Image 1 (tube, rainbow, N blue to C red):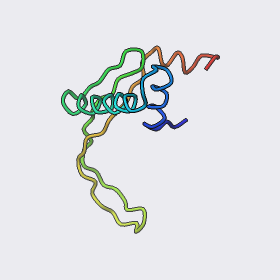
Image 2: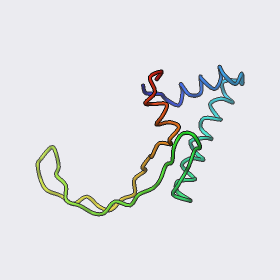
Image 3: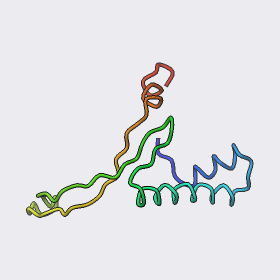
Length: 96
């Protein structure tokens, strides 16, 4: 299942009984704070859900899939997610 920010805003509108503009602002604010936290601290932990962390990837050799040419992929930071035990149990329960 893929969920868009618009769909999340609609869910917030329906469940929280706030107007649609306020629901959209809440969703935007949540993701903005998530981004800010990752940039500032490198880790975001959401109890019962999981932890987002920033990892540094080293430079490595890669291949251009269109041309087949070898190239160097530069150093970069990536976001990694590790689920919580609560989420793991829910994913693996028979009711899921």
